[in-house]
Amino acid sequence: MSWSLRFSVCAVVCAAGFLPAARADVVGKDGKIHVTYWEKWVSFEGVAMQATVDAFNRSQDKVVVEYFPTSQVDRKVLVAAAGGDPPDVAGLWVQNIASFADAGALMPLDEFIREDGMTSDAWLARYYPPFAHICAYRGQVFAGISTPAMIALHWNKTLFREAGLDPERPPRTVEELDDFARKLTKRDAQTGRITQLGFLPQEPGWWPWIFARWFGGELFDGESITVGTDARNLAAMRWVARYTEENGRDEVRTFASGFGGQALNAQSAFMNGKIAMVFQGVWFDNYIRQYKPGLDYGVGPWPEAVAGVKDFAMAEADVLVIPRGAKNPRAAWEFIKFANTSNAAAKTREDLTGIELTCFLQAKSSPLREWSPFFEKRHPHPFIGIFRELSASPHAVSVPQVGLWQEYNREFMAVFEQTRTLMAKPEAALAECQARVSASWERYKRSLERQRRAADAKEARR
Image 1: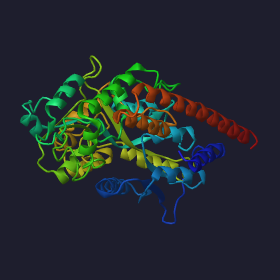
Image 2 (image 1 turned 90 degrees about the horizontal axis):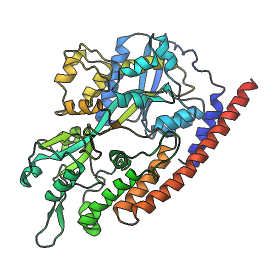
Image 3 (image 1 turned 30 degrees about the horizontal axis):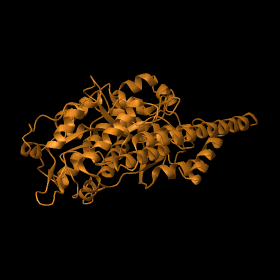
Image 4 (image 1 turned 60 degrees about the vertical axis):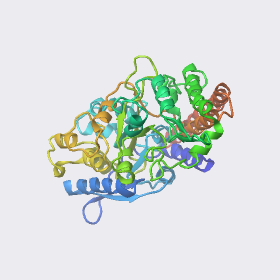
């Protein structure tokens, strides 16, 4: 986090003591409440959410939601909240919740939930467990889900056949993953250069921390940083290093130079048959249909890395929040509530509403336990049932709920890069990460405590 952004965080914390929990909404000259909604999405995802906004606006005559695509939405929301003029609804990422909540930049939703005759526990119980966990932080509900995403194993069935593997049977354990990867790796007979890899940990390289969790490790125990003290994290990084050791650092670098960072376009290594297996999200099928229609592929759970855990998965989500200081918080809640409910009886496309409408148009699964007949049977994603099963897994995990996650994630990315390129031993890289992040965590906690005391003192003088 930059120093300017840290200043904005502190400003929000200080201001939080002066802001009412929920002010009266502002009625416009047309007799309606106009809700401003800042969202990161453009392209087909933005079109899908605009459709949900339009459906909400048609569903009643008191509130009009106005959708504004916004780049760097997390930074702009935080600065706007510090300045006292935030949007009414903001579309953020799951990793923003803890830091924004710690900063006092978000309004808890529990009061609105109670006013609607529900308890927070009952509201959260409608979601599959990983998404209920994402919405709550330190005993309060701070977010609704705009769309969820489970990350799962994808494999190229054609390449499996060519390697003599059963295309309908993905690897079931991490040992099988390694074995399949070797069988799926090809080299040029003349030059010895790699022409195909079975698996590469850095492809796509967006969530290297998940390998630690997959191996059973913890990064944060609720109080302390554990990246360098949990032996299972070390086992995960040693596993990452072995892929470079076996295939050759220079050879892997040369091979990957043709597609690095190109996971969601026509240069995708998976879509072009350069890599046979990859961990990707439910959204991946949208890009496969666009850039490689007809690709014969499968989707399944992560192979077993911890004995007995056969349904490990990673949960991601885009979230909807009400920034503290929003002018129309109750109307904002009405939209978030609409966007997080559905018509459980929907039998046609026209019957879809709320979260199912958004997720159907984005070809993603619903975070809710109950699906309508149409959504379940007519969903455009060919493997949506598998993603639903993974949503229900007790072993699905998401981003650690720690307020300095963005810094922590950058530090772990450095561990991953040093490890996979063999520039540092995993033990040394993890130890350095442990020291750096632990020190930052202690500073973070002290800073928050100072800001809270300052806010309390100002509130007492009012």
